[in-house]
Length: 334
Image (cartoon, rainbow, N blue to C red; front, side):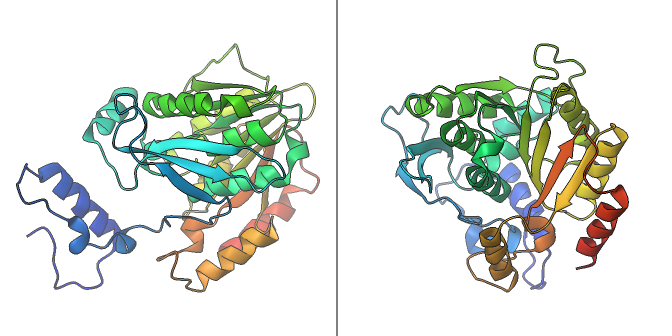
């Protein structure tokens, strides 16, 4: 038996491995097996189908007009940006809970992860929403998004902020194919902003053609894997513009000690950082609602789900590090 119903309080991590084991062992059958009948997905994942639901969306196409170029595993989502006269944003991505074992072969080949294909992560929604609240931080700036997944935040910045250029990057070539598809789908709404996709691995020691050229770097939930921390910190230092003000804006949950360890690498790279826990009243209101048991986000956990705002710069922050260390400790004690 793959499941043990004698243990009603099974850990989510154990349930995830059971689903993966079944997927690997499954053989063709005339009677399809529905894992969700025995293992409910809301037992397994802290992720919500809508996340913080800050940008309204709906599915406009589940298979696509051209079945040859738009696989059945994909869907097209239409986002309505909460800004005056904003155009619709169309995003093609994998259907919910769709897993392809070929994805893991690509991961092994390039030594990367496939998190960008799994879903639209809640921190990406927060980053996109935050950008719309701070249009001036991106206007006339050169911006790059790291580990962008399907490119929601990068496209929002390109469409809404009048940035001079937006580069939407990821280390997974499959993900970058989706990014380029989404750029093409929204090309008529990008105005004068130059937008391009890029395969960018954080272990690249030299990216000479773009080094030191970005005013703003953005990323969301990119500190999940500790083995990539050093490369991510080094990439941020490499890409930040040296002459004049520049900033990396990251949204990331604490996830145990994962964010702590990344910030150690940031400091070791000679960069400076600040951490903000309450950066928007609406996001904070929704966070508290979920934390208090709202059923729309089962298993919501602040440590794994609520993204903190991390600002990284070459310049020293306004307050001494001791101030941010005490603030960070107070957040960890909550």
